[in-house]
Image 1 (tube, one colour):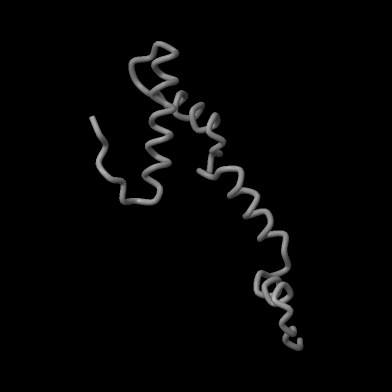
Image 2: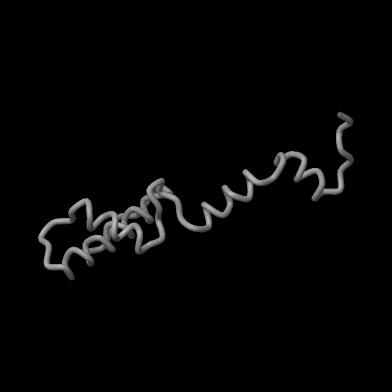
Length: 84
C-alpha cells in the first residue's frame, strides 16, 4: 500500500524509526514495539536520549565552543570587529 505524501519535515525520520523498531520487534519475536525495542532502535540509528543524531551533536558542540557566533561570522567574512 503506497504511503501518503509526508508534509512534516521530521515525519520521514519518525517513519524510519518506526520501521526500524518494527523490524527489530519482528526479529526478536515480539508482537508489539516495547519501550526497550524503541530505545534500541533509536540507538541503532544513532539517535540519543535527546533525539539528536551525531551530526547535530557535533554542530551543537561547535556552536557552544565558539566565543560567539556573530563574532565568528564577522571573522570569517573579514568584517571589522566592533570596538569593545
